[in-house]
Length: 386
Image 1 (cartoon, rainbow, N blue to C red):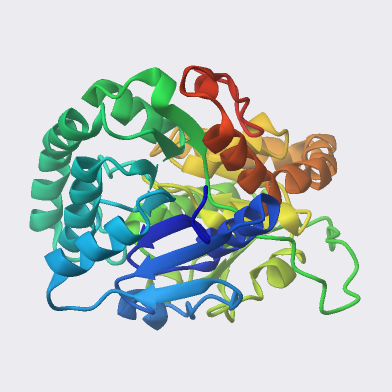
Image 2 (cartoon, one colour):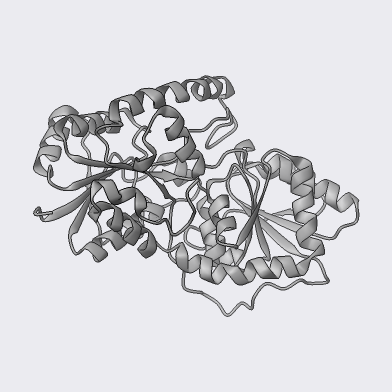
């Protein structure tokens, strides 16, 4: 890469779970990275407590709202010898335009792509189910169209979760262009001398962190806790996150604890024995990273992207998404067999080291530097092929 800018990234908003990996990629490669964004912050995420990225060492540029075709052409031409990385490329029409323009110009393209949602539940709230159902039916066809256009022009896709890999394979993307990937955040330094989580009065303390919406599986988890407590099994589940907590009132074994201040998730989660994330669809679930980095194992539905990685690394377990019986069985097994939970906890240290942004950046760099015919041989640190 002869340009002073070796990597160019394009995304709707630059968040920490992308930015730390980009910063590590810049450090490891020894060349500069430039990030184009369509907005400095997402208003919906901001209302949920997200803030702008804390990574201020990266060079970013806000994409203007006018003369987009001219702007995209100029930037793609200016950095035509750089590696271009499009993250969440199909979220906004403007980024789709830039992606296809880059493909036609022959620049070196990679995508970082979550799976599309196969369910009708909303991503941020429980409203607009009719429109969400329509979108869920259209997405497979749209991805087939995108893949048809891009399959020969894109160098590779960093697929967020196994579901993303399967969706792209079904759409016709060559397997040797698909690379297992995820989102990555660093371990946060401890802000207190809080001791490791312990059972008090022989009552385990578990935690849910996320929006209080149907897609996150909160209603399933509430019902599971109700039935578990009816059987006189002692267990507490604390809920943190944005949304209306009124449906939690009066539920046995359940407590709503408010929102976690941005950046404090690992500190809060460290006070619990297990994180439970029963999503009916979650492209990734960064809170899984946060828990493992805090030394807390996880129990996820098999519709949570990060769940398979946690299980592969030995720091988590999965249950069948949407199955109340499977969720209850998984929770009760970990309550009854404390040794199993301890074994998962012991694995979090090694798993957290593997889930660091520097590991992700090194993996990306191996792929960027490998000859075309050898890229698929680059070994993923977080999963086996298949």
